[in-house]
Image (cartoon, rainbow over the protein chains, first blue to last red):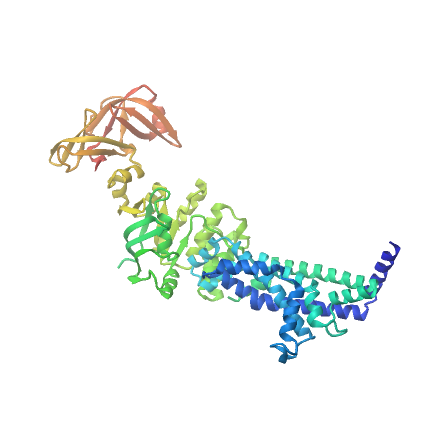
Length: 240
Length: 358
């Protein structure tokens, strides 16, 4: 028990002394997870989810079921697929992205997209059908009616961003397999915790663990507050 | 040219026919009420006219242009109309933003939007609520915001679906005042669906009666309420006295109808021997203790069977050899000291009797 308290105390010391390596690793985790979530949310999940929700096509239910099934996509499986695709002998090996932050972002985009996409679709499905209908009756075009529906679902949609971020920052499989855990370059909080724990550096691992939890809480709270106030979806609405 | 013309319009839901061959013209500047019982197809018809749904058959012409199916023309036509649903919903924004939506979607300038929204809010008496979250409004306030939201776009045609359903009398009266103002001052063409025939009578000049998906009668309001086309319409428009009889004579357009052995006189051109139904509005019947000597050609002695008060009015049910209901004020009932079992004379003019085929 005393060893645990000793570890916690040392972890706190690392935090309050602004240990360069700890904070550098934390910052890398944050921006890789944030970049992958922002790209997935704005470029894939929100537009594609809206397209799926607002259009009728054969196989729509099957597609939504498939997306929901991919919620539990194992991180190591994604890591393996990305590894096979981007390794030197793989079909995308010529890009030379292996063991770089860029490939980690690509892997995390693949990982978080099903979650965010599925939640965007279910958020839009939860909006009263009278919303787009009222907008249409007031003279809105299809796009304008879709935007007002998205705006009505903004809180639920922002939750998808929160969920996606939670999955991205906490995953270790993709980061380890395609990032390679290179110190000062691709090492992120989760891979560092894994490595340091294996080395017996519990204090260092705990300090990183505290930071990981702290970042997750702060980002989630910030995103949810953003959803309640003037969020990115509201900005989309204003510019329509 | 009619602003809106419906030609053989039909609608189905799965295998159920909702609307059958609707033919209707609504002229520019007209206030038209579509009345009918719940489930008659009024909302379906309004949704078709607002181009929210597509009909299975027929045509919708707006200003002479067929807008039934073409996507681009539908949006352009829809932007010249406004539709207030029975249970309007407001968007999760404040009252001002809600009312401004339609103008924003039409890409109007911010300055013009501000001016028009303020005017519309003023018109419906909601100017003090402009910054309030629209989701926190009461039913009546929400309805007024919905009307402002529709009016702000200066529609050529305003479609209203049961605009005061489920509202208290005060809110109903406020909304009716707003509608009366729009009709008088702005000359907006209004098509309103309502199951409240008295509201239709108060607001509209023209009335269409929709029953079981069929537009059974269209005419000026006096025509609909005084001369319903058939028994169903008669029952719906408040002809509480519908009595079966047989024409026994016809002299110069004044017919005599045998009803349970009594003769009722009416102005009609039905032929002797025809089986008919006699329709008399309860408010056209006068009650007195002595036999009336005035112009009423029909006077029958009867016993009061019941007196039912409803607000300031009372329905007095008589047995004159056939049942008869008279409508009078509660004050008159008290002054005449009417009571169950008392004998009175019920009198009504021959012109107050409307005859329809059985």
